[in-house]
Image (cartoon, rainbow, N blue to C red; front, side):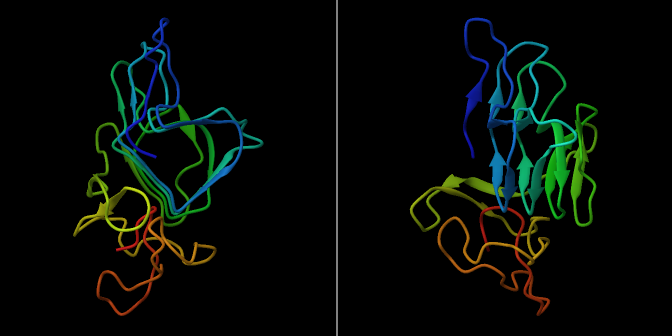
Length: 176
């Protein structure tokens, strides 16, 4: 999910530049470069969870980073989530909960995490993707359990992408 904008309507309010959801789960997704152009109350440039803390959005092996709010202090996520581990969240603040499980990489506004992604491009397969660049913290940092057998392009997952002779799935939709 990339390149979306929310909050451009007449009232300039916005939530969820990439996704606004009240239930569901994300598995090996990449949600980047979405934008909110609303007011100071705009939240969740990447994903806003409208779910409750008793029924949160589940997230595993997913990148949510490099999303932008034109005004306000909320960046990549807002709302109630339940991390199932091995996510890369670029910037998180006090308006979201549920990250910090085993394998999670979580940045803050003061110390964001750069996922080191290429531009949205055709990297093979039927849709455009953001390739993982060399040195990306998402390489071989996912959890193989329950990961899809193929990436967004239709290529096999669970490779040894960092050369350590251990096949580990990447975080996100792209397998290197």
